[in-house]
Length: 259
View (spheres, rainbow, N blue to C red):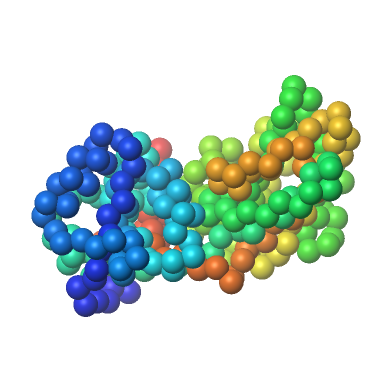
């Protein structure tokens, strides 16, 4: 639902890409902006990778972020235009994202924690295929998955790495997560599962010393893991702003009909 807001205080951030830096300079000439400490809204200029960086970097600020596409991939971004920026932001729809919380234990017993907006992905580190046991809410669902890796993806991440691995595209309102194998060898025909968003997924690495595995939460990597737990965290909420006629729900729906 589109709701007109009072004129916001906007802070601009941009990637190092030439197009993003040029847009930054142009918008700074056109509009009064404030520092991040004073801002009501962050306008991010770049691609999806930069949007993820911005979300992670400012996760504790609880500020909505309005992205404009000045990078390579722009699924999480609005179309770039230098015109009517304040009006667009004030009328934008809000999508609230809840990231995944990853707890990864390494072979030396160290516990690592990280948040993922797109996905938590486990990947083999060497030529040796990974062997992974999978449990959902404490119930063992797969004794042994032989694969290059496996991931849990959010609806926001379902059109990214998950889709490249032939996982399902997930509408935002569906309340589910994708559990998707990466080049599964055994079971050969297993294509993954769609899980309720409230579950906890546990991965246990089998033959870990021989078959080392890394765990990545977006761009945060932990190597030599032996156990990884993944769950959606409702304690953390991120707000993305989208033009009403091209909101994220519409983009996810449209993506399912792209060739």
